[in-house]
Image 1 (cartoon, rainbow, N blue to C red):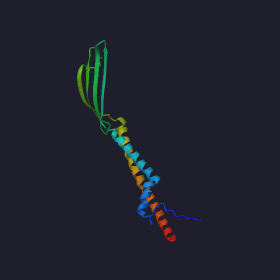
Image 2: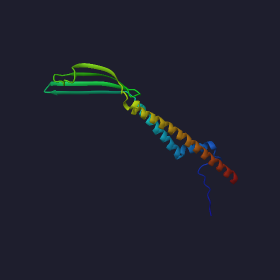
Image 3: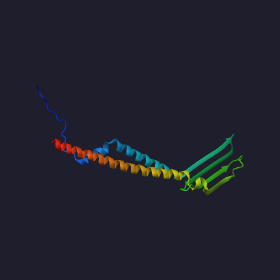
Image 4: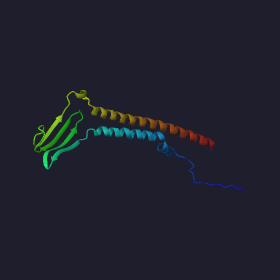
Length: 171
């Protein structure tokens, strides 16, 4: 009869509470889920804030037949959305050609203006509602994460204390 004693690695005699809690916070699935929920809420908030980004647009339209330019229509425009549903717009429009649509005037025109919906959406437009909703969801996700992590930390520490008590009774 032959016996062998193998040791794969040396294990520490004591698992300290800081190391145990670090392992729990690193590997527990609930922590990952809470972090993902917070990340999603944060991205939703950024997307809602992005609805206030300026919009630059350029369009061109032209028609040529047998070397004759019927018309050429170009438009460059920038829109700056503001919080209360208003927009500041500025642009340049250029029209030329022999057979233009009479709706358009020839040459170059520029414009600047403010678009302000009067009583549309009752002073609360969809953009503001989206921003407010996403901000509330972000705050809710942060609160839920803090509450769940506190409960997890408490439960894990109680399990650690029970384990150390049992280990002390065993040893």
